[in-house]
Image 1 (tube, helix red, strand yellow):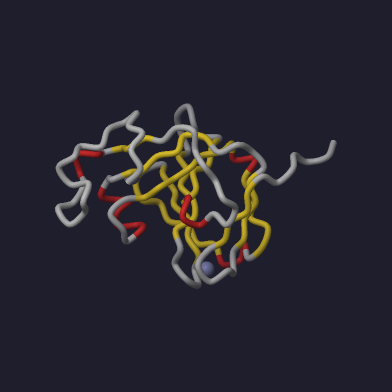
Image 2 (cartoon, rainbow, N blue to C red):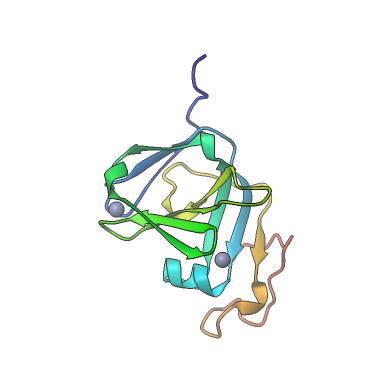
Length: 141
Ligand SMILES: [Zn+2]
Ligand SMILES: [Zn+2]
């Protein structure tokens, strides 16, 4: 059987790592938790999720570095430029899914739905501070 067609391409800042997504992107979220803020060096992290089998590193796998940010949660990033790439949980309902940084997509993508996580943690230096963006919110940050 032929593999499913590649729907999306992505890469890190330096281009050493390239990945392919062979699935529609689900569960688009903007996470304001302190770990995502640190990991991305930004006000929040925007992720999309796909079944892990549909996400493949097609170039530069040797540059991929991984770190567990909390028990059972692994984040990967490019060891050369530092771009955060993926987020995975090894337990629970979505342990066979991979979340990846939407900011690293090279293919245009328009989500049908998106939500904010930990919206009460938006730092004072971001314009969304105090607006309590919520799960289920459709606002574009
Ligand atoms: Zn890189
Ligand atoms: Zn988070």
